[in-house]
Length: 167
Image (cartoon, rainbow, N blue to C red; front, side, top):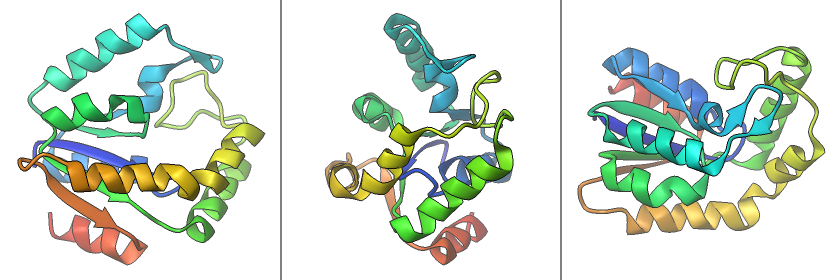
């Protein structure tokens, strides 16, 4: 396990799992939100994002967390492991709300500095509607993954803990 792709709904624990895997296996961790956002919640220019992603994918070792499904084909072509954190909304939504309330106005380690935690109704809609279409897309990605990719579909916090313990 040297190139790990982690996807899942908001609040599923992607960034936390990425940091844990990175620490456990001594792999560099990249959160895609840091690639896509500039300080002040400004979306980076497409060309800048593309250059950063290509450099990242070319590395020998990495853990990359985040959805941005437009990046899945290239990321998956280089990954050796795909982890889909498929936790239900009733677990994810309270996590997102708690994260917002406790971290409001402060930077998070998985975001670009200068992008403080905030209330964002569009994001909350994404949290609650993730399972309608995006979950199906992620499941399709698991089924269509190349043979060289080890796929893990984790649906409960206990499964995530067992996965990390087994590393």
